[in-house]
Length: 203
Image 1 (tube, rainbow, N blue to C red):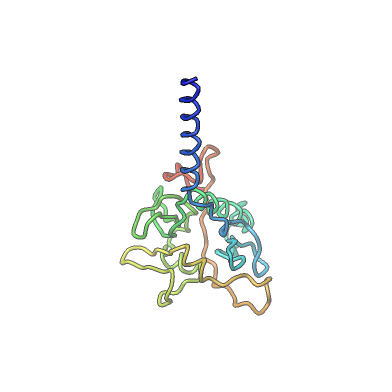
Image 2: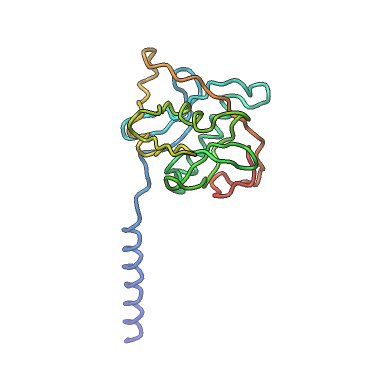
């Protein structure tokens, strides 16, 4: 009888502990979900927020269309990476860096921190910081998510999504997007994990 009582108490302790742990876990960020959609008649990486759908990047460049990397393909691949980094908690900042001797746009967990995940590579000769600001429509003198050091640009994604214009049913009166910089894709390894903090290859 005493043994059954002890067993019962232990079971209750385990359940209570599990409930406490689960209760302390942060809720999934349901207000942000990244996917490839359309904005202004072009493929766009979209973020679902409480305010509505926010176009993050409009894929208007056809530079790589003849190489098999259409705007739709780039939109789909990069949007999947945005979503993966959002889920694993590393999509705090967008910044620039170097991977495999190439300039890249990447994610960072902290302002001033190193790349923790690859989004996409840039065409050789591109200005990484200027390209990042151009992609997201962030200007140097604007007050908001942009933080600029002497070496790198950091864009706070939470602030960006809180302040960026919402897509209003693709109205023709919407402000035109900035010219699209060229993005350099390379073929991914089939084994690579886009959410890895140390990508094995560029795509």
